Amino acid sequence: MDFGLVLQTDPPGAATVGLMRRAERNGFRYGWTFDSPVLWQEPYVIHSRILAETDRLTVGPMVTNPGTRSWEVTASTFATLNEMYGNRTVCGIGRGDSAMRVAGRPPTTLARLGEAMRTIRELAEGRETVVDGTALRLPWVAGGRLPVWMAAYGPKALALAGREADGFILQLADPLLTAWMVRAVREAAAGAGRDPAEVSVCVAAPAYVCEDTPEALAHAREQCRWFGGMVGNHVADLVARYGEHSGAVPEELTSYIKERDGYDYAHHGRAGNPDTAFVPDGIVDRFCLLGPVSAQLVRLRELAELGVDQFALYAMHDAKEATVDAYGASVVPELS
Image (cartoon, rainbow, N blue to C red):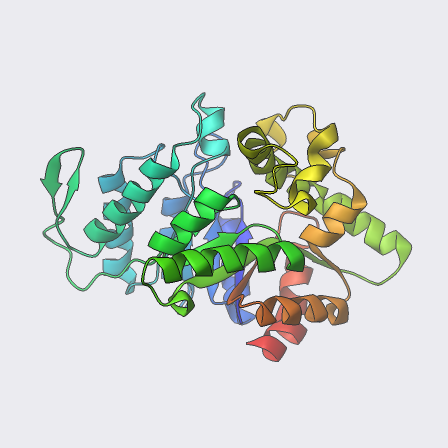
């Protein structure tokens, strides 16, 4: 299993770069950042610094979207980073949540997302493709490679990931839901004539290493409760599309948002987010990895058995350095 670190690009940018260097020293192979240009600093500027100050880390957004930036700009950005630093980028992409909604736009359609994934990959790898009716190619690209990994939850999105994406990003660490979603992606890949094993699987969720005491676990839950609210934004879209009891999506994913009452992106992805009080402790425990290393290893081994290739650790809490160091000392050596 590979390991990644996921950060917001809060100022100062140098702090993000420093944490990514720390992650690489601790054996992490991927460095991910949010891409929401109104809420945080421009990620690709920071990605360039991360790549310059690390040797092996693969860097990318978790996740960008097809609506905030034109596709040829996104492709050119990745291709430039790859030319400078040796094909060490990955394009995480989805329909768009905070980046789109904060700017007053709805998330893009899956059809548009599928077209964007193909276009960005083709251009970044130096091939000609058609963008809005015009044939384009980046003539300076030589030997570029850009894996495109898609974030998804619902049946149609999972099917698109299986048909089109190089990797699948699942933003929660619940084994039951992971099994259901990985199976859906693999079935779609096989149906499209692909080898399902060629689709990488990345589970991304907060991890908080602490003692196994009621007080420590309660504090860890409060530091990570924001994640249930973030996932809840996507779940609310699924409930609106499919209904809570349709059977299209497991109720283990949808039932917890019954008490959800709006969402203010000013607190997005932050500990203490007041809009996530509706998230019950049980969801925090299921979606995140909390507690001592020994307990987290049990969950990670279970995820690996389900076909998870990478665990990407969200570190938006008050123990970033300690958790990265704990993983470097006791988790990465066990599972890499």
